[in-house]
Amino acid sequence: MNDPVTARELNERRDRYYMDQQVGAYSIVLSIALGVAGLAAASLFSVAPADRSYRVMFWVLWVLSVAAVAIAYSGMTVNVFALPNRIPDPLDIFSPFIMALLEFTLFAVLTRPLTDQISPRSVVALWFGCFATFSCLACLVITRIRWLFRHATYEPALDEPIAAVIRKLHNERRGAATCSVIGIIAAVLGASAPAMPLYVFYIFAAIMAAAFITGFLSHNKQRQALESGLDESRVTRVGRVSGSTARQHDAQAARCE
Image (tube, rainbow, N blue to C red; front, side, top):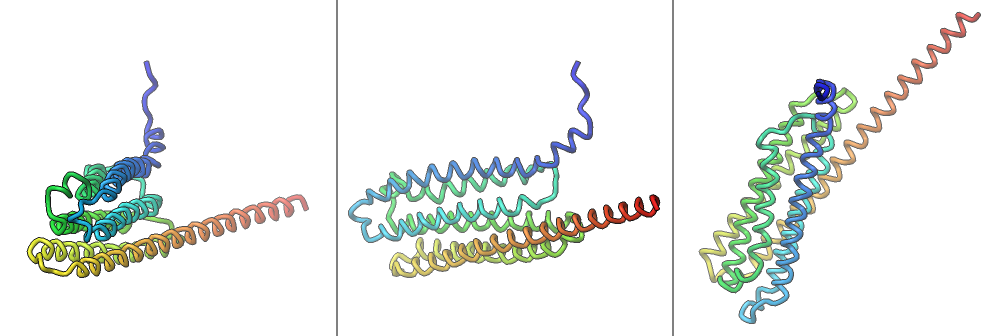
């Protein structure tokens, strides 16, 4: 008969289970997205002659899709490290896979035969619609992560860096919401205003690119805040241990005298 599973064993599993589950899920998401990205890139090399004027636009959308996948993965790798240990609930389990589906659609709309069956303007409108949905989900995921941080308990040395992370997440949520609104506007204009100049969509794309850059910078600042807090905590802990050891030595010396 097997030995009974103890609470200590389960607690040891829980210490890393949430982080390992999230990293594993997002790694699968990343692999799927990059695979479809390769198929989309191959399709863009053979754009139909009638769509040549949209070739650059399609490549811009492809680059933005890669950036969207990268920033989602970047945010996960930075935040999940500091999240509290817990057993994932259904929202934590299914959100990465819904994110994978939306990332898949960002590239799928740029692949053949879809680009051969609908007009290039419809492809652009469809991509912005998919991106708006992706940004909405990102906003919900950021809200969820921020809630976990706010309802977790950390040692005093980490209060300030965690507070900095929460503030950065608030800004990221606003950025994701802004990208969602821009995506909706671009999708509606692309579908309902066929005479809209193409450069308008380049402007929308430039705004999204700026939002991505801001997001990457925010992730780096979150990393720096966590690194600083952990270093400070380590120095404080070492100082306490050193002080305690010195007091013990002094006490021993006094007894010897």
